[in-house]
Length: 219
Image 1 (spheres, rainbow, N blue to C red):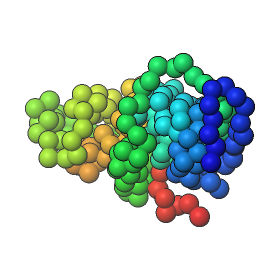
Image 2: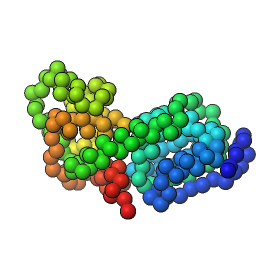
Image 3: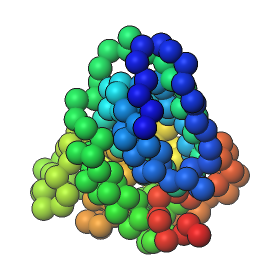
Image 4: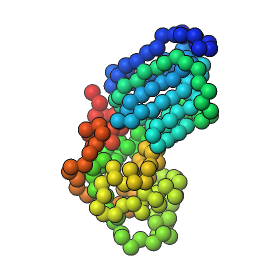
């Protein structure tokens, strides 16, 4: 096992997440009690996680920090990774062990898999089922669904204008994946939002409109 103390150099590792799963990468870092920075390119975005003695202490994506950023990484199917041994003074933003976040990551995968299987892609146009729904009616409709932050769900719903694609709503609301995937799951499963056609000529940084979370689509 690797045991890194202080800033002394040690073996870095890098690879392809479609060949070596993110679960395996995180287990290697944990078991080796490695200290350093894990840099990943996933879905066209950079995700960075700082480790100390094998435990994640900080993580960041363009729109998420801390545990939400690490959970996003734990759902990755493909991308590249590189681990660089180093010591960081970055303030701690993760207070639970990686293993404790596994259930949340699995839930996110379940929600995203459901959305993909009902045909939702990033370029899918979304519409409100009832354009005259009041705020109280909305709260009543989501109450029996998956317990989520009500403000995130309201904000997402307000951005559904019957014209915009999912990716535009996510971008306008600056939602991270831990926010928009469960929120959209509730809105679709609760028949509050309906799925329209796939919109063409929208730019995707990855060249794909897939949500990229359904495990069964991976060979």
